[in-house]
Amino acid sequence: MSVEHYIGRLAPSSTGLLHLGHAATFWTAYQRTLQHKGKLLFRNEDLDPQRSKQQYVDAMIEDLAWLGIEWSPPIITQSQRIPLYREAFVRLLATGHAYACTCSRKDLAQMVTAPHEDTDDEPVYTGRCRPASKATPQTLQPNTNYRFRVPDGQVITFHDHNLGPQSFTAGKDFGDFLIWRKALSPQDPANLPSYQLACVVDDADTSITEVVRGADLLKSTARQILLQRALALPSVSYFHTHLLRDQQGVRLAKRHDALALRTLREQGRTPADVIALFSPSSSR
Image (tube, rainbow, N blue to C red; front, side, top):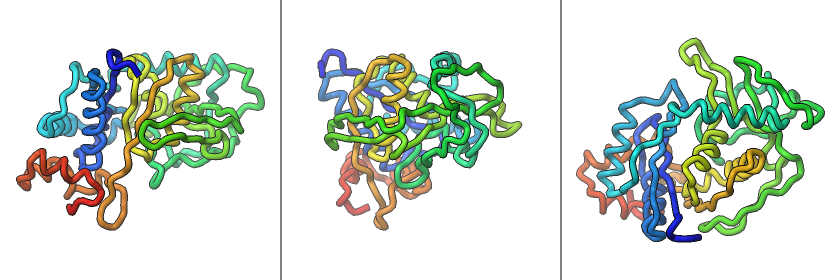
């Protein structure tokens, strides 16, 4: 990878306070950027209109700056980029890569956020709404959910710069996945892209060269590689970090309020104290 052209990104969602696990991943992203003498972008993933709050945007900016992480302005806000995602979505429809889906709606509440391998990974779709032929392009139907048609049996491989060679089989390890969803309620009027589609479009549009994120998103990387290929977008490199877990072995999440950066700061912890906690063997 050319050090002159390295561009990484921080991509937190503004649905809660950042916790120790987030900090560890973002610190790694920052260190990778420094190592390559590159540029680090900040992307506010606020496509969950029910849970995204400005107070969390302000908090994550303040907390990451306190930790010592620097990024290049301006902040990229996903909710301001809907036309860009819609353009990519329409292209997928026109090429037969996407189709309307009227079933399996239980996972729609989570589809605008990143899935996690050990909690709410999107189940393999049964294919009930899948058209018989990919060759038939579909027209856009308003207020409808859409899935990406994966090439069943195709093995998606990539080399992770931290975890080594990775391999997933479409149709087995994951199925047709959601890329666009209709409004979930009268209080949520917008038709919005999924995490998978928005992430791919943003990474390409901002010329990201390496994605640093948690190992719970390895399977999402395989999905996003398929989207990159379908949209003829450039590929990127990946560095998936090991997940931090609590004393019971549970992956750290936003429910762990005691390990929120804001809470640790209020307890008098210094940035150096927090960075020392990134080691899985550290006492918390």
